Length: 124
Image 1 (cartoon, rainbow, N blue to C red):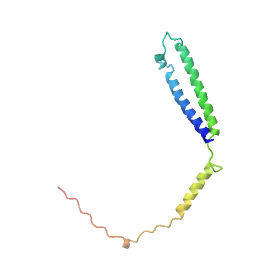
Image 2 (cartoon, rainbow, N blue to C red; image 1 turned 30 degrees about the horizontal axis):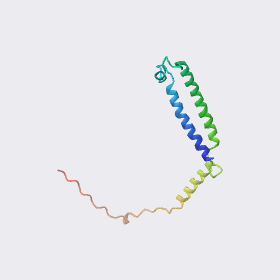
Image 3 (tube, rainbow, N blue to C red; image 1 turned 30 degrees about the vertical axis):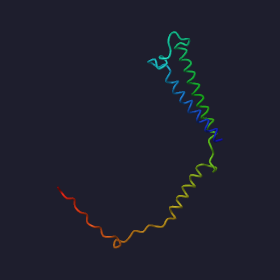
Image 4 (spheres, one colour; image 1 turned 135 degrees about the vertical axis):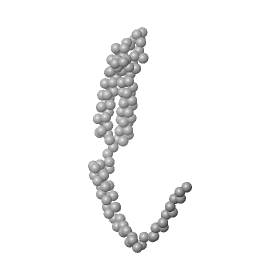
């Protein structure tokens, strides 16, 4: 199950990178990058290129959506029944460890060593 999840995530990342490339190639107000790759003499005109790029965009979006939904069913399960239970158990265990520590006692003022006076910096 873990391998299937990894494969799906890799496919989603590849599709997302392709989607970015396709969106950048589309014609915008100023012509976009698609105007650089098409000319009047090509079999595919600017209008057909825009149609193909639009279909590719919607196809990649649908592909990412479907894979994202499918991947939620293949997420690796934790050993516990509920992931929040294991987190709660961990927090409680850490709390018990800190409570088991002995209380720190501060030394009496008479037990503290005398502080040596610091030398004043010499002025030049």
